[in-house]
Amino acid sequence: MHDEPRPHPFRDSVQDVAATHRLPDTPQTRAPAYRLAFADPDFLTREELRPVRLQLELLKPQLILDERGINSTVVLFGGARIPDPANKATAKTPMLAELSRYYDEARRFAKAMTERSLQSYGREDVIVTGGGPGVMEAGNRGAADAGGQSIGLNIVLPHEQAPNPYVTPDLSFNFHYFAIRKMHFLMRARAICIFPGGFGTMDEMFESLTLMQTGRMKKVPFVLFGREWWDKVINWDMLAEAGVIAEADLKLFEIVETAEEALDVIDRWHDR
Image (cartoon, rainbow, N blue to C red; front, side, top):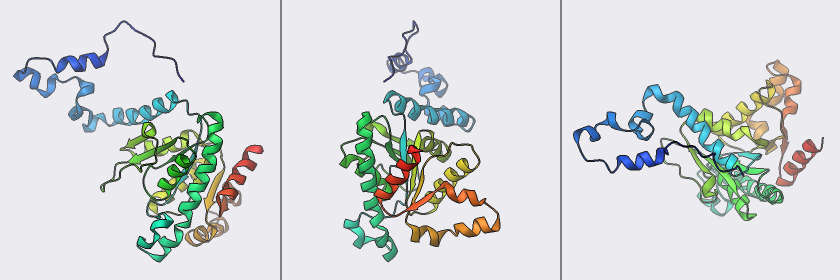
């Protein structure tokens, strides 16, 4: 954990915010111009303040994760619509019901990884998900099964998305900017696991692969769950045959079926 902030002789900004609430109610004190800039949501959400909001959204989770002593994470990406097998009868399609087995695999994988994480007192290999339902819920749930902590990185969407109940409350974050959220997924990543999913999962998968392919991010174990799914959804070999990716790029990832296979891939990678 980090030391307490260095004391300084200046008045604390929190004290000033509290002081403004005790001012006389006058036309001047009610005016928007009189509000402290950092305590004025109308000002902070102006178009011109976007660079500041980007910086704040990057900084807030960074500081909290640092204060919690979290050094490395294991990332789980996957579909929000994949149901818990106990609820697969309510799935909208037969294929979604079939994909529910990956909920169980994500949960088992996260439980096993969190048991390892606890050996470092929850500082290494902490499970991080998008904080929502489906595979994300399974990942946070598996961590809770092991008695450990896990991170949820939610995003504000047009339809309501609340954090799933298994995210560690103190590690439940909410984002406006997709780009900053994806940075936080990868900044501490020691491994990345991709489960079947839709556009969001594809976006996260291909951005991560692109960063490693181009050397903008160091290579880490990259595991896809479900060969039948991925071979149907993406013709990997054709990409290489066409020359739009290199043959070596196909070695950036491995495809597995079970939590045990994924753990083995990660162990072999780090043993190297």
